[in-house]
Image 1 (tube, rainbow over the protein chains, first blue to last red):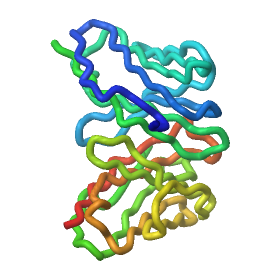
Image 2: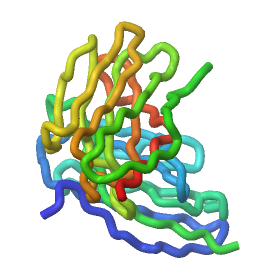
Image 3: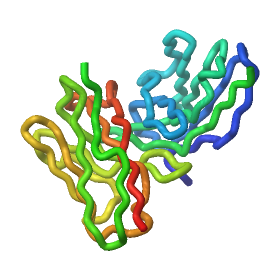
Image 4: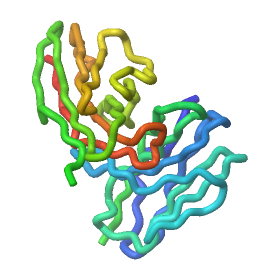
Length: 111
Length: 113
């Protein structure tokens, strides 16, 4: 079992729709959870991080964390074609300085 | 405000050679982490440097080594290059003890032939 799992996609949504990206992790002791966006040929950009169970909103983005189910998700409201990219979920195990990344979900927003 | 910078942008090496990649952290950051990203995969943690010491290391062989300088910049050295070392090498900087604001540099694309 991979430590961080994501559906590789592509997830295709029409412009203006809500895109829902999901991620599961295996280490129950994980404390910090991150979402990065990576455009083709570029480096990852931090979107947001979440530590506590529940929702965290930042503009059009909402991160949701459920530690009991070991599940973290990212919702993108009013999706735009410019949101088309690979979205990487990353987890930091307890007492660790490293991020463990999933392989990413490719999102395609159709005009 | 300068972000994370890396050099060179691209590099082509031959099997068995050695390579050095460089990274300057974002202004105000003192911690540097290195990641390897193979095509179609997420980044994999190589190691982190803080206060000029390796603070944590991932599952990479000893051929991968690093260094951090007093100005917080860092180098990644890879010896005895293998074809499988071909990847995008990413440097990320942050402040000590936190991953909240870890920002990645543009990366160095290494091709081993």
